[in-house]
Length: 618
Image (cartoon, rainbow, N blue to C red; front, side, top):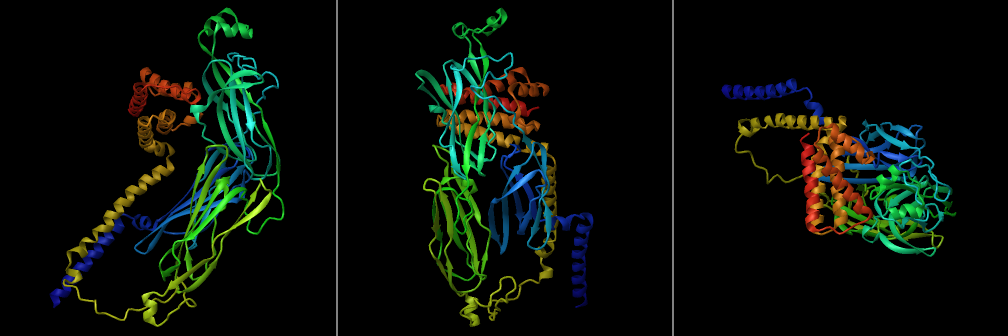
């Protein structure tokens, strides 16, 4: 008996010694296991104009749930309080709830420059506080571009001064007198009577005081013939979007500026009466010259929404439908039930409110899971926003949960409309524990989180272990599990810290996988003969790979700048030539699509793939 106690004491001592060694050698062990929450902030864009709204999202990932977040806008930003949305994904594993919850806010910059959004403070439901990362935004103060018809724009000496009736941009606006939140469609059409080899946007519009949603421009039907004032033109739709005013008053969309490359001929020179010296004339023949084109500013008169507004109105404007459902109307205590709401129709889908339902205290309700679909084809923005709310009843009984209301303003009829869900009713059956305890309805006494759970009175299924625990090999082997888990956590933590703190490393890490994703998609589009999307994917693969690999803003760089960058990295002239060739072909196809043979398309794909492979060796 004495030997038995000595052996057991030695085994326990050995186990404790192993734990002490792990904690001594790895002091971060406890900290790593305690860190089960990740808090971060992100932006929808890093470059905006003054007074242009953008999205700021706070995301909390992990086991804990957060109660509230305080956005620190400072003096440089305005927070639009009625433009907040919530989304959540969660799973239940072994009785524990794991969440990924996001709050999305809308901010408006008040001035230009490189502005910093300070860290936001997130308060967890257990009282803990966390700070997000700070973010920097480049806010541009757009220069006043001259308008078409207001005199000759300031042009470089290398720009071609084309007569105004030969090439110009005409904006077409569906409606200029609007209500706050009402959409207006703006289409920019390029009219030309010359041969254009390429089109390039130089300065985009600045929709100050508007929310903007871009349409997909169908390049396959972009170039058509059209008579204007008795003259035949070729017409290309180069830009199309819908704007939604966010405030009342006189609002303006700034001018739009672009460059076109015009193929010069002797006929054009004589027809336009262009004065060139011999060298200019000789060097321009058979080549292209750049011509500036402008679209004028567009002014709108925006009226406030009329009063009185219905109760619960949260700013939705358009024409919508509401669908609501409950997946079950009879469940057992402790089982989840899901409420689903879907708003669909015409209007600004991105700013639609997130519907919610008030539930009795006997229900544990999780934050809503929000998803939306925006259809940007046609003449109006359409789509839907869906909300799923999961709740778990903790007490039995019959519950009448009422209706959910959604109100919106219909600008066509100038009236408010209120949509109603069905009356929700649910019967919660008692659980087996409730029945065995003698209570048929515990609705009045249940308090989730601090209630008294039922005791098991039967021990018929209990049996002793065949081998004592202290003699089990698995018992002592289990002490190695924390050490192994620790090393996995260390590796993951080091990677996450480097990804979070080193932007260049993070971009380099995703450069190759993202390029492969675009190339794979381009390959699939090639098989389907969708040439427009194929060239767009090739262009994205090349540009994003350059941006990620060298940590540069590829969207803000011109082709000469990209070429200089690759030359500085000692890339061969042949590879740079392939790179520029694919980019120019993709850009030309966006403006003036032409039919390519299958062999030609395969060649462009191989060029892009080979170029990325060569750059990856740098």
